[in-house]
Length: 329
Image (tube, rainbow, N blue to C red; front, top):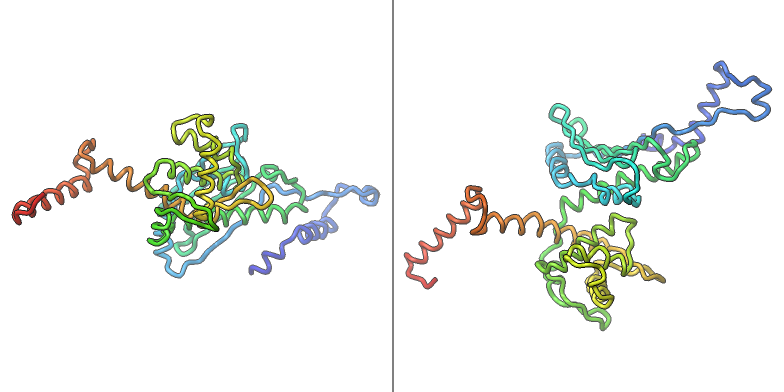
């Protein structure tokens, strides 16, 4: 079946059309056809799908529900840039949004880019289906003639794969105890020393947030790009960040293996390890520590949340045990 699908080329589709045009009534008489007048095939809509059948359907449903929860921001312009590998600016037309549509009990995830769309859902309870539908080939600077089908296939299937890669990393981005501890210590590579990338350092968190942004916008960046996007995250203006400080940060990221320099250029790109580390750092910090500490803080707004009540109960129990055992506080 896959071989048959792969064999559906522009040439085969065109031959099928010509076969039927020879049999059906034709508006062009033989004289016009002899002069070169022909129908030209164009692509009105193209759909490229990837279906992954799961050996444990229930785990697939759990995975997809987690994917929906973790990826509700996929419709943002920056995220759409990653999935469709296109740069999105303020003047880019179209709506950029994520929608979760529930038909009965089967949810589906929709990500829009201009007139194109990715739809993802749990098919028949046992497969994860990802579909990219392109309604206007010019969204990707490609013409509508049928001979552009092969180039369009590359774009459609690449979008499916990139979406799955993002979701897979987001669903399982654990980097390991050894890797985590390596980030907390200075590193020396080929005689060059770089400071640690400490987890709770606001500047480090800002750097890794920016790395994720650069993954989404064409994948490469330069010294000036880092300064422009890092400054607002630190509450500063780009002019307040000196070139030396940015060079210091780039060296830290490079020697820790999170970015690499593109040969014969002054541009950088994030590595596979850098992507996983950046997602782990930023998600853990934003979704667990920052929110969790706010809940259990003595100044928390809602004292009745279950975790806040449990923390207070544990604190009371420990203090009572200390008093009973007559231990120093």
